[in-house]
Image (cartoon, rainbow, N blue to C red; front, side, top):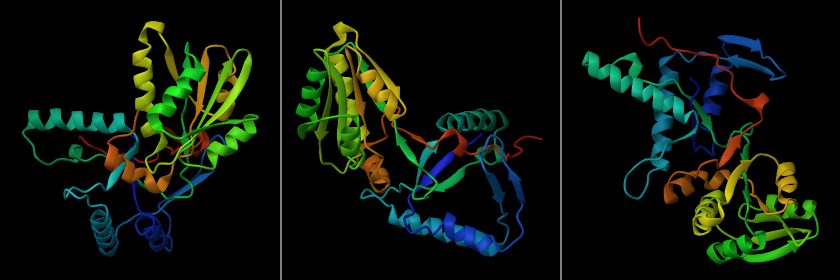
Length: 279
């Protein structure tokens, strides 16, 4: 299974620094990947000095991410929630049957990735709501979220206004035959999707008798294509701010469903490693 754990390491002390230390040795494996996905090279961590460095650096990062109540928020599951849940279920079942407290099945194979890795891109997942009045939804969101409404001339202007911020929202809807490009200009350090989704859920509940539907879409082109249809409103979300990712989860709890996607298909991690759990 592929489980990606994100770590908040702006100084790049864990993965990147350890990589520098190991790349002087011969690779464990090196191969090209299929479908224009580049290549991959791996080095083995095997010395006591390397293991000690990992332990000490993780302890240091844990201390930096210690919360006011004493708890530690060291990792966030960026991908593979279902795989991690399955691994836990297998272990919970097996340990009961065998009366075990320690076994290879107790430990999940994970990949630790620094959230500040330049190769890790967070793409926001936008929203589109069908069978509602776009102007009314915009007013409702302004009331709940605050901020100022500004109207843009075209797609490019709205895109620039949203993507140059970490808290603005773009609304695209058809009003009396005219496509409107509205910017809800907002300021907040909380991740935009964490603020928006509860407001949308509330709006859908209030207007449940109209049977409105929400969908989650990738890419700006779809936002503008769907927003131009009657009775549909698309919402363009801003980029995910990496520096507020952990603090937002810490302060507001887990992110809403369909918050972001990580990278294009060709950038996804290939399944290259596995562990033997049972003989």
